[in-house]
Every structure is written in structure tokens, then in C-alpha cells.
Image (cartoon, rainbow, N blue to C red):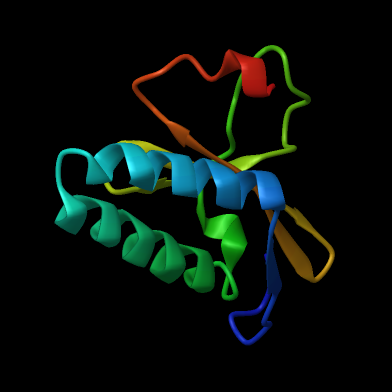
Length: 105
């Protein structure tokens, strides 16, 4: 395990950013407050990955190599999917847990 003093650089892919915008846009149709809350929580949780990103569980699926992606739950129903490589944390996707995200894999 890494030291708690190590700081990782969090890199959010364009695709993950677009997924977040899409989810927020959908939420805003029902509640602008909920959409803004999703974005704020995403920012907070993504920033938290700068410290000890290994704390979250692995995303396990028979279609992906074991130990490739980790997952972080945000806003009770969205998964922030990321991988740690060296000193970088790559956020690759933001998916709605209520939907089948097998296409992502």
C-alpha cells in the first residue's frame, strides 16, 4: 500500500466528462438542484482520489482483466470508474448503476 502522503494526479478523460454532462443534463430535466449536486459530488470525489485511490474496490466483471479498474459510488447511483497507473489516476467513465454498463467493458 502507498503512503498517505503521496499525491496522485487525477486525469478525467473527455469521455468521462461527457458522460457526467449527459447524466447532469438528464437530471436537470427533473431537478436542477440534483444535477448541480451530482456535479459537485463528482468534483469532490474525483479530487479525493488524489489521496489513496486504492481505497476503493475493484470493478469486477468476467469481461475485463482482474485488477484493471476501480469504482467509486457517487450520488447513490453513479459509478466513477478509474484506474491507477503510477502517479496518475485516470477517470475513464461515469456510469449509471441502474443501467447495463457492459458496453463500457
